[in-house]
Length: 181
Picture 1 (tube, rainbow, N blue to C red):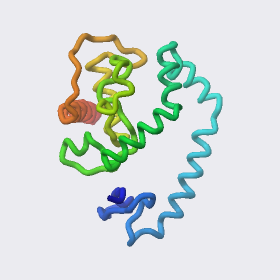
Picture 2: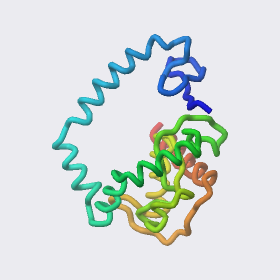
Picture 3: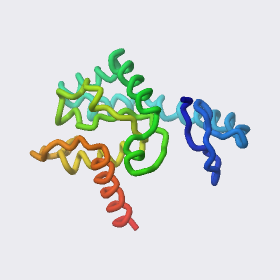
């Protein structure tokens, strides 16, 4: 089954086949997108001072986080990531649980590694998700488990049901959208 995504052309809901971002009708926009992406990629990722600061404060803030960060650069993680992407057909499992079809390119631990380190290398604890769902699921973990840089750990029981996690994450997203409006 070929990997698909929605066409990025405004108002178009046709499917585009990966690696393209546009459907057959709007494929002419692909080179323009590549130029724009390359420009932003260069300017965003070439700020070494910002990267060093982020690594020190967030990624390597303690020996456990440093070890986790090292794992995410290993061959084992890269192989696991490909297995999960293939298993999930590169579709966001949280969106799927809510009845939506959306491409995902982030691999997420259902049970957060910070709270459940024994499940870090468990394929059953990994799902494909989109960046938006990953963002809101992280907010859910911060609230429910007390994870994150400034979190206060809780004793809440583990939640492994992807559909329930998707609903709870969506609830947090809706609360934030209503309070900021």
